[in-house]
Image 1: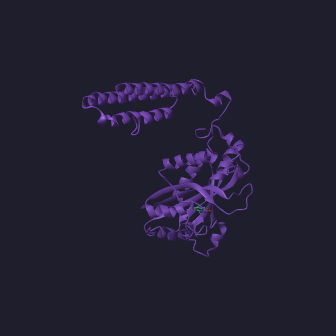
Image 2: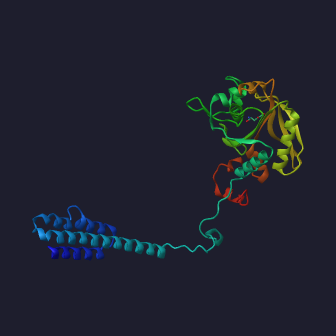
Image 3: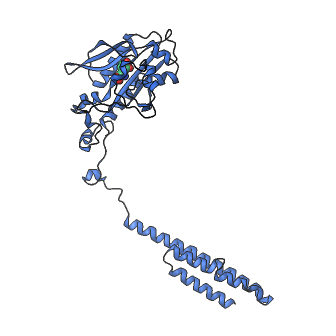
Length: 338
Ligand code: DAH
């Protein structure tokens, strides 16, 4: 019986040495050490041996198990080492080489979208003036997009904003103004907030109309806020963005959520240009936001970001921005971090 065990061990060790992968090693393990394996079969016969033989055979069987197990372990490790060594040969990277872009091959670095760059710049300017940047949902409900902004159902002002209505009665927000309402719902006055983001309108597309564009909404509520405060903030903002001292003028205009309402024009490169809508927050809007309009007042403004980016970079067609055309985007190397 002892010879039989020795023969089994030798056979197993031979197979282990010859195994080329872990599946082959698993097979050896099952065949020799498994519950129905060959070593186990020997152990099962112990009962039929003469009593004085049982001890030595049991010991020898256990020793055989240990030997085969350790040979399996070593061989497994050797196979792993060999595989890794091969990877190191075939997949190595020379980390001291310059990146592919600078050798003129392979991937080139990306660029920051010019709208993103302007949004980031504005975020910084507003932060420096103490405005908190807020976000709002793109899918808005009727209440926030219209009603709470003093645009009740059937109000003609709804027609001015061609709206994508969804089948559940919600819409894609047509402007960033609903964030005013959300700001009041979530904060107590005084409030200084901005929202920079995407808005959607069902427009006929041409060089100056897109169905997806970007707006900044500014919202300021405090005690005894006046048009003077609004002018000061807007002028400071425009000076920073346009990087020159601009002249501004206000023209009376109508937006349901402000009273009085204005349009602001700026001089840019010697010409008057219509830039944004603004005004003193309508008392009804404050009340919709849960703010006592006899105690608090405020101003709000909204401007299109895309127009400003067009001015900044001399872009002639608004549709480039959302086109995903790399030839357009690649011109903006050297943006924020580009
Ligand atoms: N929400 C307006 C629009 O998209 C823009 C606007 C005008 C916003 C006047 C304002 C404002 O906050 O006071 O046409």
